[in-house]
Image (cartoon, rainbow, N blue to C red; front, top):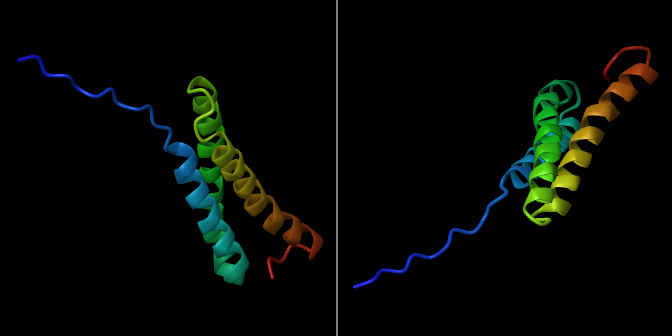
Length: 95
């Protein structure tokens, strides 16, 4: 008896994880004024990293989750830059 096994599909879960982290960091940065800005930096940086690594992996996999990877990196960058720009424009204070 010959057993046939199904071929495993390639996965690219980094863009999805980065997108979730981007949403979490945006939520923290927008909803919780002082504490959220600082807590939102870590997920934002991870979203940026996962987004760019996910884009690289998506190129190798024929575009699998490329759009999510771009959104992940974009959300991370926006969530990272906006609080810094706000602090710079408001004389150094976060609020």
